[in-house]
Length: 187
Image (cartoon, rainbow, N blue to C red; front, side, top):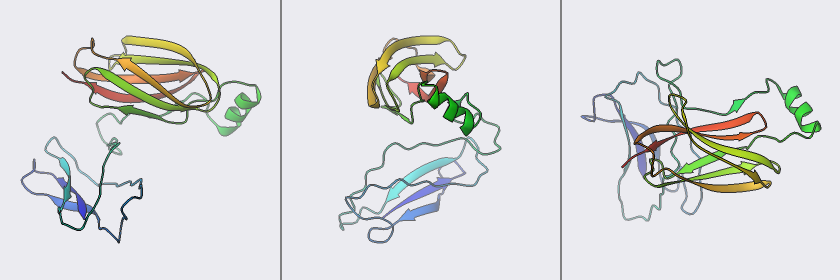
């Protein structure tokens, strides 16, 4: 069994916001995609943790690809999301009929934070020109690579070993469409 807990006092105490019990909320050898919404307010003293009871009943739990997204109506900048220059489904359908390239459908980054090489995985909906671009939060372009991508799962590696530690954005760009995600370079 394990829990997602939140502290609003820097970790002095925690309260459980979600729990998962073997046999009830999860089974071993099954992949789950969970989403939890935690109501605020959040401050610089807010902490999140996953906690397990470490019992001997063979709970095989692996937690990965955790995304913490911005607060609704919060003052901080929300995490970058899919940017779509087409404003409606009709325009997207017209683009497809005209033979233009469809945008990638998802992007995953790992490891994040990264020290040397950032792995980028995305799904290309059809064959076409792709441009990978890394920018600083100030918008300065620090890396760019263009290539043809076949339809399907794509993998790329970006050498970030020469970048200063900090927060960057990676853009996967196709024909006026973009996926953008944030990553952190550490040393």
